[in-house]
Length: 257
Image (cartoon, rainbow, N blue to C red):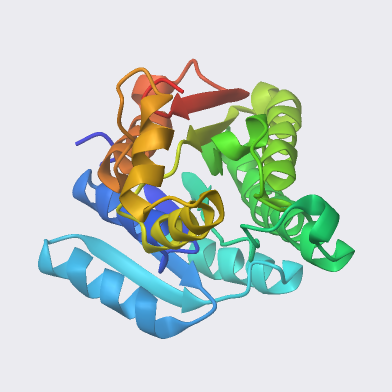
């Protein structure tokens, strides 16, 4: 197993990406710490992990709250000894389907403010602990919207901000044995949130939901979009020692976008 005896903290673990990654981490031997603002989705993921023989702990923590995150990591260290992996899959509350010239400034700025805040809070807190042990992996996820897409509001800008933050943190923490890697997805159509966004874009383009997905998929080399399980498998690989020479990188999980 690639992550045997590893301790992984997953923020936004009740969401589609967070839960898929949590299940994959647990399958590969990690003890996973599922973090989110509401307990019910975390409990569902934890039950699925336990049923498969994995180890999962849950905690209600707001990733925007610096003190709450620090206190929770203190608790993990106190009870379990160390942290190997930190993955941020917190939602950005982004609004899609509206052109920038029709958006309110607050709606445009919210995803970037939320992204930078939660990533700074969770990643720097983890990095401080990891540096003491001389090892650790911090993971983030963005989307191809950061390369320039229409009607994605502030989401694309937030993706660029996350990737830039990851590169800088990687440069600062590399000498202390901490790796920082960002996954970039093309959007997984089996994720409820992506499905909702595809419906919005399809409506604006005058297409069916299926036709819109096909148009997006046609721009990829594989002519399809990555499934949640494929994104989760890449997260496992990047978190493992098999990727020990990779840091400061944005790893494409886009089917060749």
